[in-house]
Image (tube, rainbow, N blue to C red; front, side, top):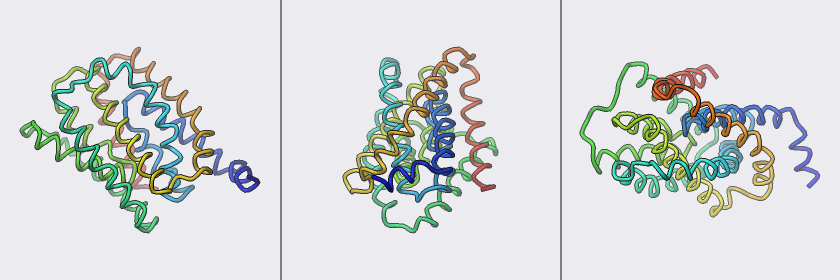
Length: 247
């Protein structure tokens, strides 16, 4: 207990509070993006497995707050194959995370975000055929990336934004997928013993600013012109990728 208190009363933990607030704000507005903000920065303070565990606790609470509204308008017909693939692939990525060198994991996280940013900056958009096979391919990439590094958002966000649903439905589709990823990786890390009670306690302490920021982000989405949603989401991938490349 004394060691836990001493870990919390540090400058690193204060930085972590700021990081999860920024991540919660991004997640609340876009329906995803929290991991893209938090994981690259948190791994500068804590080992990758601990970083993922810490942000998942608040992510679960934020997901619970966002799910009811999203469930009412999500496009199940379009998104069901992608969600099913996430259910299968995310735990596999989480198990992989447990067995790789933390330094290698940090580099892979940076590369994953930068690649996503380059795709967006190049103007590339998915214009191929849609259906179960395409959704499964994007879902597999997203699930592995999220389970392994907490940055699985870009693959499935790119797929979701390429469909002509309105901004509200697109955000709902993203919220459900991002929530599934958070819940699955939390379950995987808990079952494998990677999340112990100390990480859980720290995560609970970090959760309130993440949850509050998520609510603020949701309010911003409700108030701001929704035609800006797609542009902001894609720009976020670029900015976050560039920031990781510079760290």
